[in-house]
Length: 179
Image (cartoon, rainbow, N blue to C red; front, side, top):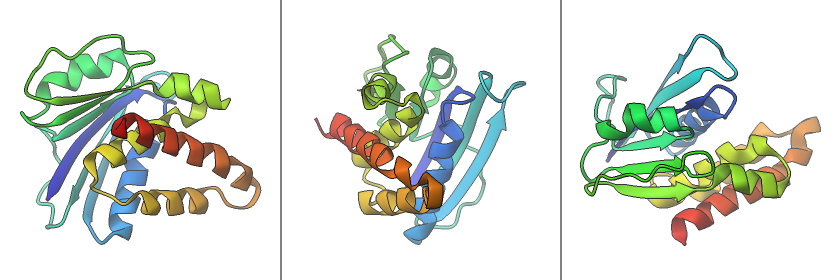
């Protein structure tokens, strides 16, 4: 089993955070993991993407040319990486801000209204957790419980008040992939 993922969007959308969460959860589940970030000229608002590889075997190279999945949080990401997904792969789209429909018939597509759900929950910063939930539920590469445990670890002390909202965002993303 090997999943090679490219995640892309604007800086500030939590793309790097999704990638780091996937890698940390993968390591917690005894998978081999690789995370390579790439930033545009500006952090917030500029282009941000990262590659993640999760595998049950050693990873020979962190370079991903034909990803099994892509997570796109904006239109530019879909335009840049949509054609690179291997046939039979999966594209996850933040449909709140990416109105485009994928024309390829050889890939699976999940349209996840991340920003809309985050606004309903009262905090646009949790849109990445919505996407993380959809990704984990659709690919089944990681256990949902592992992600939930990570949320509890990430938001400790004064940040503990953020746990319920992030858990709900994760749950809503899961529902998008399962429904």
